[in-house]
Length: 296
Ligand code: URA
Image (cartoon, rainbow, N blue to C red):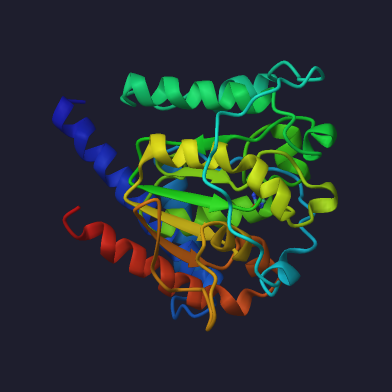
């Protein structure tokens, strides 16, 4: 195959991947007029084409039981500005698991300074004992994806699967998030994904304000280093902790956090329980895509 043929083949594979991701998301929305057979054919063709992007990681299950209720909860106080750097290494601090070691290897091309800054923060988080959540963790869960992405998704906090894997959004909610990301035209690891808190709250409960505040320096440091063009706040907890929940609703309204545009939308775990809200989330993501197309 000539280099040009290879290029065409790659382009075709990328187009098919995007088309497949979009069709899958439309099928999720249950509003698609495309017959099932067409979708199955498109999926089969896309699967037969050599993948360019990484496949979705299949993970058994997750138990984000409180997600539905979380979207309805009362606001919590705003996070304080990061005062100092996180201190006090946890004596029980764990060595990075193989997954953790692998998870934070950013794609090539990420500026060295950004890479180093994030690596330091990640390392500090691994030794953190700033709040009670440290005691119950298996792994800290810092981030996954591309720190050079124009878009960052911020969720609430790790669940059981994430705590085990040391990587955010790897359970069913993460798989739904991956579909949303795919439908936006990104490969799974093209975007940056992190959480308000880096350790799992017991029983997957919403992080307490004191926990979110203790963890705020990490989130702020991450977002400062990544400096995305747009942040998507996944769920009320993330929106609250970015100061975006006021009177009169919060979802689907542009806000700002640290000077960056933020679109708050429902959490994918909430969507798993209440799929009827997928449509408004898609509308929010379309707003995000439209803004990304505007000159930065
Ligand atoms: N829910 C979140 O908010 N974050 C995760 O990492 C997983 C589930």
